Length: 499
Ligand SMILES: Nc1ncnc2c1ncn2[C@@H]1O[C@H](COP(=O)(O)OP(=O)(O)OP(=O)(O)O)[C@@H](O)[C@H]1O
Image 1 (cartoon, helix red, strand yellow):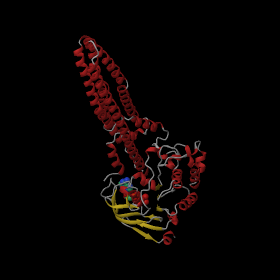
Image 2: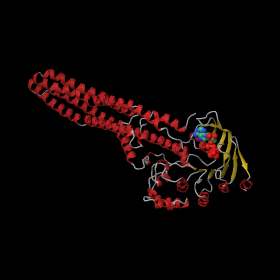
Image 3: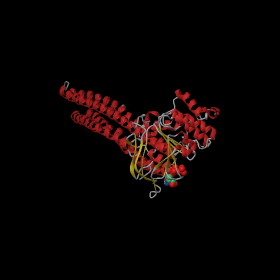
Image 4: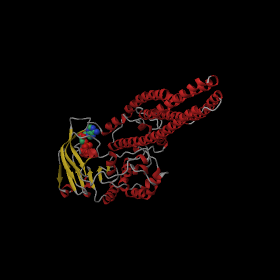
């Protein structure tokens, strides 16, 4: 059993662009990593263009010169034009040009395919990074930065060697040296042609066939090289990706480009949450089962209040619903789908998880509130409304940048109550299927909390809502109240409970 993000981490180890994750944090070693990658990528581009442009020119010019010289030589010897020889030469030319065209087409095809593959890889990696970010933010777990950085450094050193090896011994020779071998033959032919036309004819044929062979070899080599460059373990030689990294690094909010975010999709048909014989223990304490053969159905559209002793496992019910951890046994289904099979980002897009300890990314208030969707300025009015409903509008408008104020990572520049109010804005901006409210607004003063709760529960009508709290006043808004024991949720009489 492992933390969900540990699992994702493991997957990421094998990715080409793993170092990318940390590149989001400026001033880190990743900046230099990316610069080296960019350099290598540029070099590759240069080598590629050199091979395709000047080399072609040299060949074609030299080959035409060669034909003219040979023809003159033969013609002079035999007292006329040697049509047979000329035909052979032109025949070879035709083969050469056709092979050039095939090669060019193939190379372009490979490029298109490679680009598509890279885009897919990028998308997948961005999704995973996003998942990781979610899990970090939602679980409140501290990401093991040191450990990850050490791993990344080791990987980077390994990759650096692989990169230089590839550049020095694969890319440059393949693109520059190999195609120039026939040029040497061509030069030799031209020199010899002056002295001995028969020898020169042999050289001419040797030259053309040599060239033809090398083009043919390159034909397959191009594919292999592009592939080798792309699959270089955990390393990006792709300029586009590097540019994206640079964009991410330079973006004041450091968040991921929208095009790589997974499209919003409905991961389940309704908001029923079904726990089936769930056994769960935290990975750090595997012997201590918190959920012990727990079975329960939370129905779509109902509001549940969950009470219980400290440490009994109320929050654990919600954390397992969010797929933050693996289960020891049993299943959790949401709208008939096993949560383990639902993509984490889609799952978290459909579940609004509010706690008394909200965390924030180092991006603007507007972006934090809209996250994981991108903030669209068209939604400004929605933001204003949400801020008013959560009683934080005055505070935000007093900030010089208002909703565009960039928060410190974690939101350390806000008071605890303000964090909870800003986080609660999410409920008025985005539409979710399931809402988990775990001791929300615990630091907001009682009168304001009352107003905000009224607004929240007005908004959440018809949604599945799980409310966990020790301040039972919030349970006035719920349909059912349950007491959690670790094994069971025991239904309480609402009136008696609240009196
Ligand atoms: N990340 C973790 N690793 C190990 N044990 C944990 C972790 N998080 C919680 N626990 C343990 O799991 C048990 C249940 O915790 P949980 O947070 O679900 O309780 P709770 O009922 O919500 O408590 P409270 O009302 O105090 O918030 C506790 O004994 C806690 O110590």
